[in-house]
Length: 198
Image 1 (cartoon, rainbow, N blue to C red):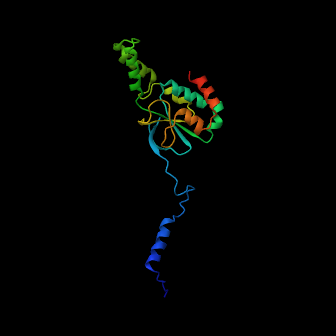
Image 2: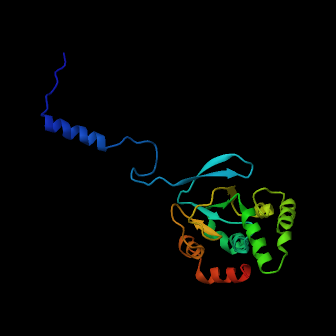
Image 3: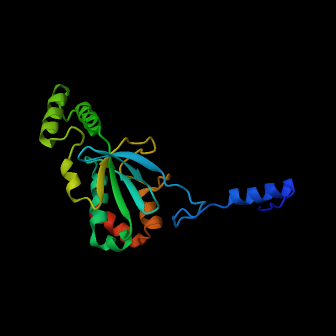
């Protein structure tokens, strides 16, 4: 019969505490203290919902298809001179499903400025929606040549203008993201903005 060694109670607690603090290898290469990447629910353009992990290699860019600054940033990111800075980055483009509300608001502003009769706002909106063919966005062709994947999602309150970049839980300005996060030289950022964001 095996004999058991009796240990003092305090020593038993110390041994148990040690084993509770030490974890088994889960097969992950991440340290136990690594933060979990935030995630958001998004809809693919084909309609299925997925959870998108915003890890440290993923840059989420909120855009609007009607926005000229979004179009300019898209062209900047597609420019061949940007490719070295986008290596190992996953660009994800996020669009709201309510762009038509903004378009209607713009048409009403045009009517207030006398550029369009107020009585024509709804007819013009209907015409634009028919031409678009999308129930969500003004210009669905915007998606065809994005340098990353496009999704629909709820636009968070942190997004005050387009485009807005999200890295993890932070929302750096677009220029800050380009300069600090991607390491693009200031002279290149300036020349690209001069070329594309007129």
